[in-house]
Image 1 (tube, rainbow, N blue to C red):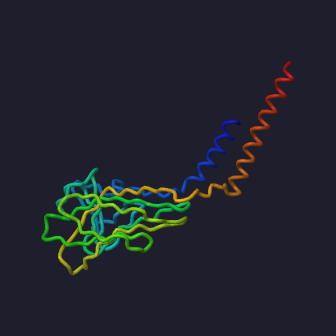
Image 2 (image 1 turned 30 degrees about the vertical axis):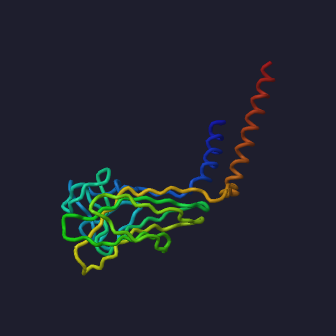
Length: 216
């Protein structure tokens, strides 16, 4: 009984800290690409790499596909081909400063690359980047957010009638630093659960005390 009550209390407490902003599947390793050397974009296959979404000429490639890239790490990387976007929505429980880093490299086995990659958060453009011929880490620092849902977008800008340009993306990282003490006041439901748990622990102790008295 006591273990059950303690588990409920710990669950209620941990639930309060569940919305610190994080990104998931940041190297695109979780996906539905199964064939060696394959890549997925547009209508080639229905690409699944939750919680990312892909629009236009965006997709994921295995290492050493026919697009000629070796991953920065792992077995997969994402790409932004012509006009395209890769998007993830994440949640925050309060005010944070975010630092981002990510790796980019241009496709090198097809013509001259002049793709421009834009990085946006909640519709605000924070950076425009021209990648190079080798994997390079780029940083975006001190991006302020508040509580609620937020949308991170990597966007390729070349029009569909432009040359066959593509930039590869891997190893996205986000670090969140609280800007002010977070609102850790438990919700009413959690307060009620905590109160019931404490009451249950007290009742359990009283029952054990009565049992010892009656046994003597």
